[in-house]
Image (tube, rainbow, N blue to C red; front, side, top):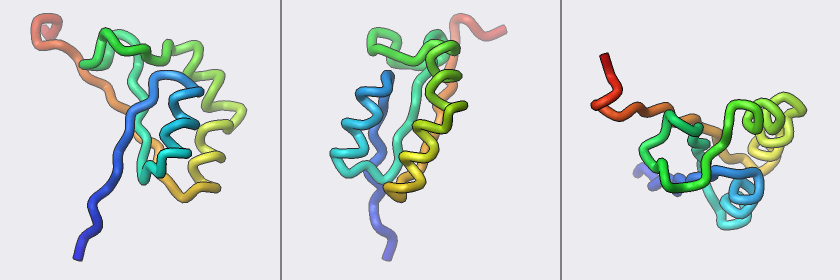
Length: 80
């Protein structure tokens, strides 16, 4: 039997760690201008780069056994 996945969003490093503490099976990161939750706080390209390449977020996910996902969405009105 398949177990439901608890997927939580994180728009900042602080929210990421809160999601991990909350027992997330997977955490998705939204990027500014490429996320349907535009009113929410989202990672800028600069901040996501800082969080990923010293391996802070990926290593933390690996240790906790959760998955890291990225959401890239664009509004229909902006599509060509």
